[in-house]
Figure 1 (cartoon, helix red, strand yellow):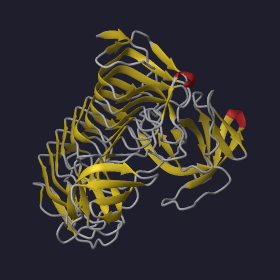
Figure 2 (tube, one colour):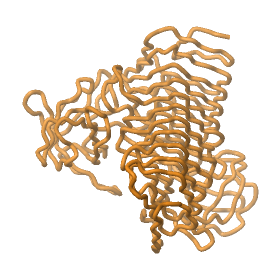
Figure 3 (cartoon, helix red, strand yellow):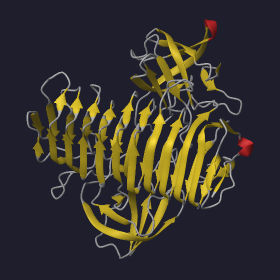
Figure 4 (cartoon, helix red, strand yellow):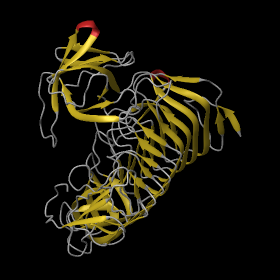
Length: 538
């Protein structure tokens, strides 16, 4: 059954909604409030397209643009199954970031000509982004990315973290940042006084990512079999596509790219695709990810921390940051592993019978049996069922200052892609708590097109005598690299690097620290042994 598409609904199961407009405008008064958070004190977000509990539904925008006015979330899918969203470009009337062209870098100041699509005003040393519907006067207390891009090629050229204002806020932050003070300059220009990095050269474009990340273009929670086809994200406000505890997601021609419709170089405030604790298939074909301010791709599980174990119940502390989202990563039927402290070693596995949110920070898991050992408080608790099989074919990841992260124990297949960014296999046990160990990864026929585009395997969890490795079974075959050091790894086993080439004929070197078996015909393998007894990154 087909019906005319209206982006704000209503919706019925089993219907294909087809649109015929060039533009679909949604304003705050047209949107539906959606409580994206479980945390208290965070208001619901206004959502343009809200699908809850829907099945067998298709939304075909016919190539039209979904224009969002004000701070709106474009698409929310919760508890949905068999959904297709296709043939749509998403554009926000005011981006969640501000771009400007560097006029002068004086070392202790930057002078910028702001993009006219990104209006701002200056007030008492603060830069205040404005729009018809909102303004933000918190840039003096918000740590932001300050990134630069080549205006002609749009390649990423470097970044800083910064705040903009006279008051310095440095409470409990695990990273350093630069403090700038905003001033109006002659000719309608903006001056930022502070230690300007050398990469911010005249003629380059600077992007300030100043808004919270609680809005995504596509937010999916507890969904199954969702397809995004021929989708374009022009200036996304947070994560481009963010599925949480979902299964079977298919991205076909999902693109973050620049053309005549673009309002600037940047396409997205944060990550292009960021998955939390998903399972089943994640298939990407002919996707293009360019111009993100944060990760192009981040596919990972999640560690929570054990707070208490009593009988068949575990209380765990949620580690997903409140600024991103708040939702349990566990569900009934999931298999979980409790690690020995913050190490690679899983002490015991259980099946979850029920997951119950207790309050803002804690979730109670009812298990299929009592705890079999006295687990240590603070131990990592991981969803072992939430491990996607990731396939990427004919995709491109480039023109950004960041990287790709892959952390899943499912099968990973990267075939015939173009990667211009670093590819990381990590495992974080101290800050973001993004898990899981790669167990079966093959990269074939892929071009790594920049010096920075290398494979970096750097888990943070601690090894044990029983489990000395975190990532294993990594095969790289028939690929080309610009770097002479295409792979650096620690705590990894069974690395196979065969049939690869370096574009200008240089010999290639693999640097391995505390690693097991490795095969790399024609390459130099440098082996190192280091003591690892803290959670410092390698």
